[in-house]
Image (cartoon, rainbow, N blue to C red; front, side):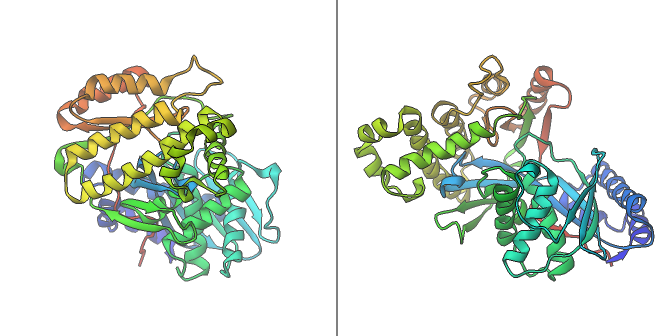
Length: 431
């Protein structure tokens, strides 16, 4: 920890440029932007919580799902990557039993009393629920939780499938881990705490991919066959070396009132598993499923069966994709990404909401992407689906054309060219 004013001065003088180069990208414009961003976070922390305090600074990236759409919640296999958009937090331990946290862009302060660490349905969907849930998770695992003040700034696009909520969960967990637990909880455990917080306290039935990817960083595959001990494999995906850029475009769809549609995917997959006396689809043999498909159909209905087919085939795609990246076969990797996108659209059926069939920003973005990139790149929906963002792998030669098309459709701020960030959640060294 170091004094807030001293840290801000060092940042402005360029003493942390090497860190910024590693976390973001090594160009002058980006580094200068991060200097101002971090200094602003410190200044706002002091404005709200007092000057002269010793502080720590944390950074947690957002993530993109590369392959494995809606497989994590049924203990399947996924491939994902951290990206160079993140949430940063300036934090300082405080006396008492209340965590206080403010975020840029929000008028209110979250104030969570640590004497009450039980879920409350009235708090569902609120950031205070995440803070309470993460604190409860530390206590459940025998860790320490204590009061702190924090100010956060995030450039992770909310509602774009880049996991702003998971990054916030891991950020709160990183602060508790760093300030009160000496960093003893590893990245996978922080991710599991985040899922616990989101499921039990925030009221959203998420899987575990988002939190683990934000916590670990880099490109990874995760096998959730044993959800208490996920198997993480680092994937050496280097898109720029192949002249490919990762682009996420926000189609500006409304994510409100979609929780039931996300939940339906999970519950329908689990209804198929229940037919076989299993808890989730990863425990069901695909051969047995195919042999008894007619019987399953009568019990669960057609959509559940189609979504189950997506699950089984998608998990196999992830395994193949990980091996293909290891062999550095970028062309075949892109083919699998396209297959993944079509399966999500056609079988998992999460490209648009059946509540508002006239609003189809995601299918529109995918159609235009296919027209530009067919035979040259790849495209798929991003994240939970139904609304929000799409993802594309764009050759350098088509990048300008592609971004113009997305911005023309969805607005000048819709298109974001991203890098894979190798680092997950980090506490910056300020000494």
